[in-house]
Length: 456
Image 1 (cartoon, rainbow, N blue to C red):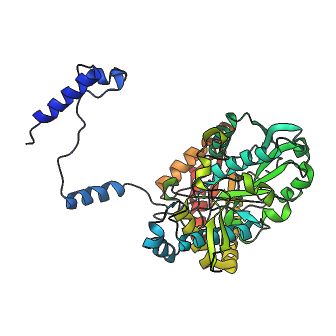
Image 2 (image 1 turned 180 degrees about the horizontal axis):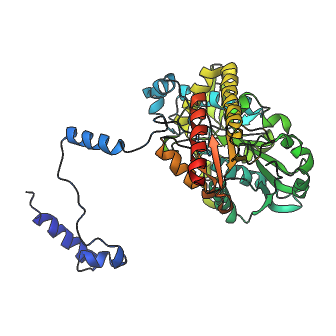
Image 3 (image 1 turned 180 degrees about the vertical axis):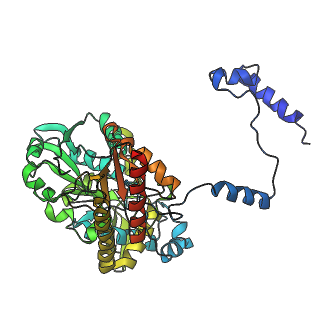
């Protein structure tokens, strides 16, 4: 047994230095009702073999999205990542170069970042992209504050931004965290009975700093009316569009219909949902916002010998350590995860991306058709086109149906009551490129069974 006396002596010495008599005095500011009276029930020391066995047992209690048919989406996508992606990304040249400063960064890593920017720029049809953000929510919030910095002097509604009322609560929470300290006022744009933005009411946003909408929205609705939005809000109001990046394989990119800034979740390219992280966000814009955009940017140039060279440009990390004077407090990027996205996009190419997008669109259509065949169910927006997700309205709580489906070995989707209290009767069902027709048929069968047993 290890001799504890020397430790006790050092403990007493430190307490005396602090002017305290006991460990209880040291933690006196912690309420007594939350303090542990007994030591933690830690196991005895284990061998490596025993630790592995315990870890496998504990991890085995988790349900993997691939272990059963899954229709859970709501912002993160179950996807297929080619094995080439992690094999290349975990090479030492990339894996150990996570976020280097300018002097240490290698030309290879810089070129990889530059290629990522180029692919994102081409994907959304905007001339400038950064090397990624933390996720879609921070991208959206940073886009809004960026727009305010550019437009608030010209705006008739100074420091006012309008956002879709269907922005999911977790994203809205991040946006509010960013804007409340900056004195930015948030107002909301309404949607019609088809789940689409009420374009005519969007006229109230004309002259504001920015408008933020998503395509598709939280219910998977693809809003064709958004192509008119820029002409309605005017050239002096920034149009920010959040996108499902995979959908751009077959629908028109926002840069072609007036978007000034495009943001979104990059996760479908390169990495699975991974319990919510690590993931990465995309951020692209027109040149007007270049000097106010957050994050890191890689530029292409030539060195003194006339050789092609890459370098961090315009926005170096050190520029962001100015606290209240900073353009943004996001001074880094998700380099390794963005690199995985670059590899995945490069492997797909334009044709592969189109095929991937069409697979998901086809599965969405099959899902709509199958769910519509259940008479007791109602699609929330039956007349609107969808991508990846559809919302279904039930006669009871969605949580009850999800519990039933779970007992049948199906992850049935997302209870929208967890986002909005008045939508507890709505279920968000999502598909992906890995969803099989037989999975959709099984879901339809089990929902029908639930409706029968529910009415008995």
